Amino acid sequence: MEARNHTEVLEFILLGLSEVEEVQSLLLGLFLSMYLVTFIGNLLIILATITSSHLHTPMYFFLANFSFVDICFTSTTIPKMLLNIHTHNKTITYPGCLTQMYFFILFVQLDGFLLSIMAYDRFVAILHPLHYTAIMNLRLCVLLLVLSWILSFLDSLLRSLLVLRLSFCTNMEIPHFFCEINQVIQLACSDSLLNIIEMYFATVVIGIIPLTGIVFSYSQVVSSILRITSVRGKYKAFSTCGSHLSVVSLFYGTALGVYLSSATTQNSKASAIASVMYTIVIPMLNPFIYSLRNKDIKGALKSLVGIVTLNE
Image (cartoon, rainbow, N blue to C red):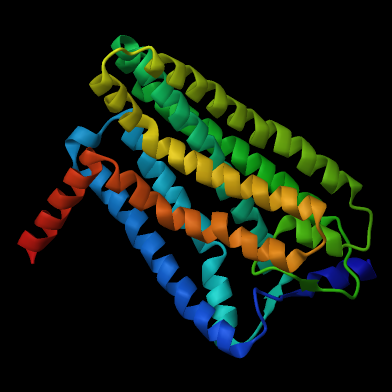
C-alpha cells in the first residue's frame, strides 16, 4: 500500500534534447515555429476539404481525418516540451506522464491505421475504378474510421493500465522530450515482462499488419500502373497515389528506424533526437506533400483564401 501511495505523488524528469541553455533557446523558437506550421497547415487541409464540395470523396475524407490526427498527435508532446523549455522546469507529474503516453500511443496508431486505409482506397481506385463508388461507400468509410479509433483506443488504454501496475523507485529521469513508453518501462523497478510482451504483440497486430496491407496494396497498384501502355495514363495513375506513398515512406521509414536503432544501441539521447523526425518533422511536412502535389487541394486552398479575403 505504501508503494502505491508513493506512485501517486511521483514525478518524472524529462531530460529533453539538450541541457545547454543557448541550445534550448534555439529549440524553443524552432519547435514553436514547426508546431505552428503543422497546426495551420493541417487545419487548412481540413477546412479546404470541408468547404470544397468536389473534395467530398473517400480519399479526402480520410485525408481530413489524417490531418486532424496529426494535429492531435503533435499537440500531445510539443506544447509540454515548449513549456518545460520556457519555464526551465523539466518535471512532469505521474498522471500527466500517463495521459501523454496514452494519447501519444492513440494518435500514432491512428496514423498507421489511416495510412493503411488510404492505401486501400488507392488500391480500389486504380484496380477497380468502375466499382470504386460502390465499394468505397460512406458506410464502409465510416466503419473503417470507427474501427481504427476503437482498436487504437483499446490498445492505448491497455498499455496505460499495464504501466499503472509498475512500481518506480529512485531513478525518475526520462532521456526524452516526452513520456515515451519504452523509456518509462525501463525505469520501473518491478517486473515489466507483461508490458514488454504486450508491446511486442501490439506491434505485430497494430503495426506490422497495417504495414503489410500497405505494401500489398501498393505492390498491386504499381504492378497495375506498369501495365498501362500510355505514358500519360501512367503519370495520372502515379499522381493519384504519389503523395500518399511519400508520406507512408517517411512515416514508417523514420519510425522503424528509431525503434530499430533504439533496440541496437543504448544511446537514449540519440534515439530522442531521431524521434523528432516522425513526431514533429513528418506531421509538418504532410500538408506540403499533399498540397503541392495535388491540384485539387491547391485549387481548394486558393478558393478558401479567396473566401477569407472577400469576407475581410
